[in-house]
Image (cartoon, rainbow, N blue to C red):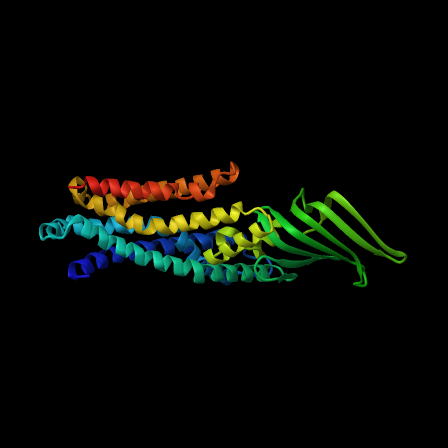
Length: 355
């Protein structure tokens, strides 16, 4: 890498860093404001809400990274274009493909940084934030590691082993105690969903009750369990696929396939996250054609607006594809890559047509 390559990389990466810093400040502020509704419950105060917001910043950064990289790249390329430095570099023998390679290298560095945050930092801090929030708000909650939680509600002790959908849980165990804390019944439900009021709607319910004369057992297809421990309460302690690292998602997919269980939500989270990561170097490359031609004299406001519009279009397209994949049971391996492939195709087409 010669001096010109380093200069381009320093300018573009600096602009991306500035944009991401602004987005992180805004994201932290929005997270903190959003947490005000939870302040005051139990020991959860303003300080805990601030810590919760800060711990969730790496996840926000990952979600905003493609759009932030695109806006920052547009601004960085705009700085080089307005001073005619890109044109001077080309006149000095540096081709547009050489400049594209430099920007692609910058994108690969950002991709590695995003993967490191997504694999090692964001999941751990996000889980820590949820655990701190749950323990601060509820004194009777005990976490059973990633994917499980225990809670006591009166004479009931409830265990949730895993989450299957946003408002549905699986592997529920219910222990019922007598007034003197002796075990009176054990029950298991394959599925549990939020019912009306403070109740659960349990499916495939099996109960074993201990009586002075023996043990009685019965099964029900549907059973209603009254408990103040709602689905929203226990969602504080379960990990959703979108919050998991790639390695953890891959292991979960292998386990679910080996046991003939539904893997669609995990496959969608895996391939969508991978496609969004690959979109990062493409977003840097996409900005280069806008440094040539009539757009090279555009101001920073116009470039940031254009980058924001394109970034939002990509974001909404990605979310639309993800929602459609879940609703219509489509192939996540194919559809998750559609927005990224469209962005890459547009970048190559614009670069090819640049003179």
